[in-house]
Amino acid sequence: MQSMLKNITLGQFFPGTTIVHRLDPRTKFVLTFVYVVALFLCGNFYGFGFLLIMLCLCITASKIKLKLILRGLKPLIIVIAITGFINIFFTQGETVLFKFWRLTVTTEGLYNAATMLVRIVMLITGTFMLTYTTSPIHLTDAMENLLNPLKKIKVPVHELSMMMSIALRFIPTLIEETDKIMSAQKARGADFESGNLMQKAKALLPLLIPLFVSAFRRADELAIAMESRCYSGGVGRTKLKQLKYSGADIAAFALGFAVLAVTIALRFLPDWLKAI
Image (cartoon, rainbow, N blue to C red; front, side):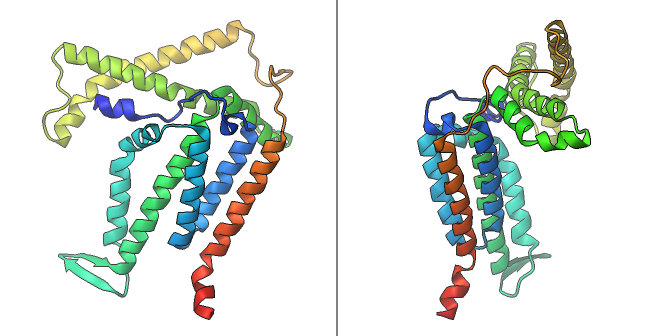
């Protein structure tokens, strides 16, 4: 259990000076959205293969170690496996491979499961790159800037951006706190490893109360710290670093939309080949 907690890297920021780190956070937000759209527009493995190559190039350029990304995927293995299982056994198709009880495995089910698993893994990895290469402060500034038009309809953009940034920032903190509580409980004789699934779930109940108490205490301390520094939301607030687009951002935008266009083209590639 503790080793699984240490594998959760969502919300962590790894400082660097690479071109990916230096891109404007707004550029990274938009390109992440474009990447997600491209993933869901993929209709075959030609598109997935192309996007995988681009994702690998992005990871290489950011100099984020592959083992960090794989470590972040470990806690999600169960969710990914369940998704694959559901797609394999509950997708209707014409080509039946074999039947077991009420479960039927078809060629279409295997294809859907494979594409879904690839899509989920690439989606998670791509969004990891956003948080790995962008600090929480820059994420907040970028989100607020991109959502600025919503202020005209009285949407509290700054407050929403701050809330999301704080939530991301406190994921690693709460994981560390959980690890400390588990170590303290183990020193008092608690057992989190042995037993079946239900027994392990019951063993985790003593963790919830101290974890909730710790989370509320940290939230209260953060609120007091913000009030003592006269924080009053986004009204009249200035920024230490102003966001500015550079030539690298324009090139990144061009590359991102070119990737989207190629992905859409590859979606219809089999039909074009059949027509030829």
